Image (cartoon, rainbow, N blue to C red; front, side, top):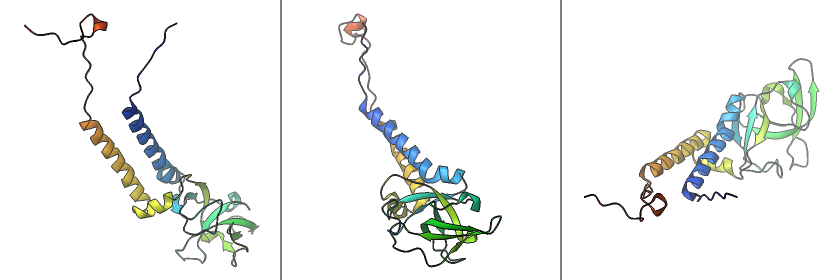
Length: 189
């Protein structure tokens, strides 16, 4: 039986892991929502706890009325043309034909439904997913939003490139006992 023993280069392993995590994070935060015509947002309040916590980052994308059902989480403007955004769960839906519909919403952590119904034109998008890293939204806001995260990830890649550039190379002595030598470098005459 032949055993192959390979020494793990932990530096390479961890640097590869950092790159993988950075790429995956960039895809979750910016790439996937953008591909689906949406965006990512930071939840600011506790109204959706325990499922969505303040500081969480969520991805939303616009959806037609027929694709929004009770139980879905939507982000909407509380009043038409109001830039404030609220993320709550749909508890009832009333359709008026075509793309005309309205929703009754409620925060999971709130005792009562929201006072005003939400018209389709107020809906910015349906939640696609929550990024499973606690307080990532707070970090995103701290470094300048989604573009700040992208710059931060680019910075990680830059630091990694500098590390690779200046990393001391490990040289192996080719004249070892395994290769027939005595383990010392040959002297040139």
